[in-house]
Amino acid sequence: MLVGRPFGGTAILSRKSLNSIIKIVNTSSWRITALLLHSEVGPVLCCNIYMPTDYDTIDCLDEYTDMCSKISALYVDNDAAFLLVAGDLNCGIISRFYYMFSQFCHDNQLICSDYERLTDAVIYCSDDGLRQSWIDHVVFSAPLDRLIYSLTVADDIVSFDHNPVSVIFSDLIPRNNTCLQFTGHKLPARVVNWAKADNIHISIYQQRLDEYLRSVHLPEYTVRCDSHNCNDNIHHDMLNDYYSHVTDAIYHAMDDTIPHATHLTCNNHNVPGWNDLVQEKYDLARQAYLEWVRSGRPHDNVLLS
Image 1 (tube, rainbow, N blue to C red):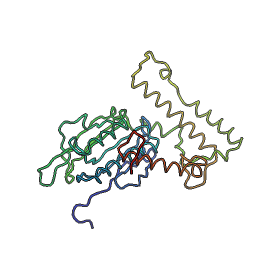
Image 2: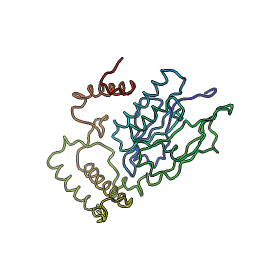
Image 3: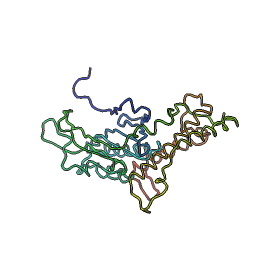
Image 4: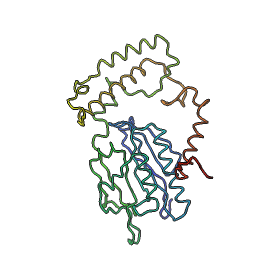
């Protein structure tokens, strides 16, 4: 039994029908829950966060800076095209954390969408009703911001002292499961091992790939445009669909013909020799980057401990 008002921890709920386009991301932090969504516009790193509260101490500011650097590192490590960050950022315009929050958005080219769309919103209200603030935010990469259908504060939902922020996107989930299906096949669940492929495997793979690619339709409009500065969303959507179909064809042809890896820890990002030659230096480089961010990003090549 939990007594009183327990706090801390984050979570993301998703429909089971989207499982095939969602990958859970290990954040190693109870303050961050993240997943990688293979959306209509590309892979999106979605982060639900609970940022530190400002108790007017140096440690609070350091912890806030550290959390910003960890989110930035997750964004880079997962090769996501876009970033979505939402949750309790414990930061308003007059907050001591606002400069760091603004720097985080600037470094990752993010737009604070609630500030852009809402006016004088009340997100937090103290138990005694004497204090109100706007400390929960949703920030997105610019292409995601353009897909927002609506963004509102759900004042009619009672949830302790925070009002939920609701965001609805249009055209974010692949239409008609375009990137989930291809000639009746599912995306491969296993990892192929090219090292085990002989000439026969490769020859069959080439034949199968030719068959799949012949079923990919290339609309003439996707390669011809009357304007040098085309901003036609339909044109862009056609190019995205064509790209998805071609990559699906490659994945399915590999899954059908190339031997699969049997090691349980194998994944799509395995690089031969990585652990032996690069992993240690990568860990040191990442730790140095996080330390540099925590120290205020000095540009004079001097880092004082």
